[in-house]
Image 1: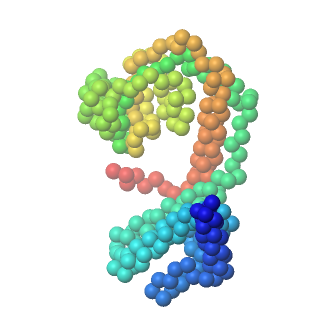
Image 2: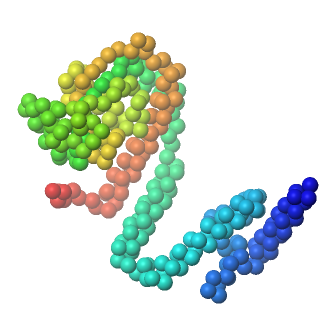
Image 3: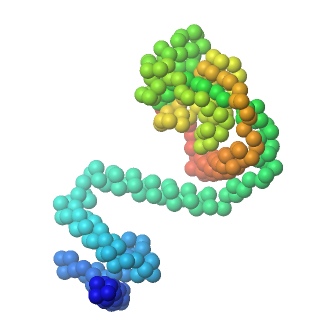
Length: 277
């Protein structure tokens, strides 16, 4: 009981202190400059109401984290790191990415990605056969489309797929087994619809597809159908309904984004100069 009373008094005292600090009293003074609780919370993007509802030890942990960051920041400034050429380049890159993310959110916020039940059903009906089979592929992942086209040209000329895997592929996980991957059914690559469509567009074992954006690495895949078999039981509409909804929403978002980029290309007079090596 005595411990509870002491804990209660400490909590009351801490919250009272926070209240005073919120009104202008300094939490820390560093090199003669004072920092109030409101200033610290604003910098950390923590609403004061949310902060006041935290346990004292959690509040103290946040303040301690801010102090450590502030001290390291001041030490970096004292060493002139903010004037370092490499740092300024990285800072400019981060600034660019932040602006890109911000404008992306603004441009996409009014894009409708609603999907109707009819659209989902139509997609299922159009790909019904895909939901009753599974495919196995081998792939060669390369850095860009030009290399992928070169690989496809050599495959069409009769060269061995496994040989070209070892010569070209940057996927270290499959390079020693001929590029062979697992078995896939429609819906396994929801976030990479072009890759999935490429797999299921291959009709006969031995067919080659690509170039297509790789789902595993920064690059492009050349794919080969190495296996095809029917499932014992086809995946029902109810089983894949939510997957199809996600896919169609993604496709609508992607289409809207592509349209925005095409408009920006016109706005900023983009020309393909051909100087990509």
